[in-house]
Image (cartoon, rainbow, N blue to C red; front, top):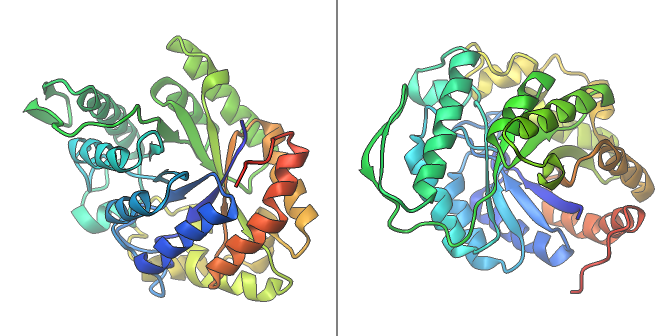
Length: 338
């Protein structure tokens, strides 16, 4: 069933405010949330609260929302055993509602915090090994692990997950889709690119899942979409530029961009047209519905809507009232009882 979620931007909002927004998202009818796991924000105007503390607070204050990271890099700044423990604790606080999304990371977070930034092939190899170790620890068994990158000795999670934790793997280009299919319980990506790219990515994801004997039809496909539900498009562009311009920079995965100031400086070249073309900035709810349904038709099963509006509560309330019900009706999804 199609899931409609809210993107919790830890890079823009203070943790206390973001917690209240998460509660509002549940009240407004969102099904889920994903929260950024950052050490540095994209801009010096931003924030960077510790997402695992925040997720624990959200788990305790909500009853229905599915929640997880979008996404965690478990290869440098964190040891994978620590990520396994953190996700298991969130699962205990929100049984059956927790998931974990992982990826190869950004220098903005990993290089800044550790001084380490291996090439992509090594980061991907580290990620495969980290996923293996995380799953072994989630089993509750004692784990002595002797990998190429990570070691444990008779390690065990004495507080394990309350329920199975789906593990999503990030894919931003088609080539990594197969890796996500082989190693993940689902895929997470971002919107705003050509449809052909997503068709190829999802095709490779499905092929990777089949390689390891899994039915891709049973695996979720998550995507984050940039949206602004407002008549003041110029202000919306300004807000996205102020806090998120760095996310539009193709070279964001290089050690040359590892501070918020560097990120913002590189983002200055991003024009308003790029921001408008890669998202949906409009006061028309039907335009937002059409935008979302394009991704549903491509095969995505869960959409996280990301707004940079300072009045995040206003966005959540209005989108939940005007847009989400329309998307569900067009997609043939029965409305949830309050």
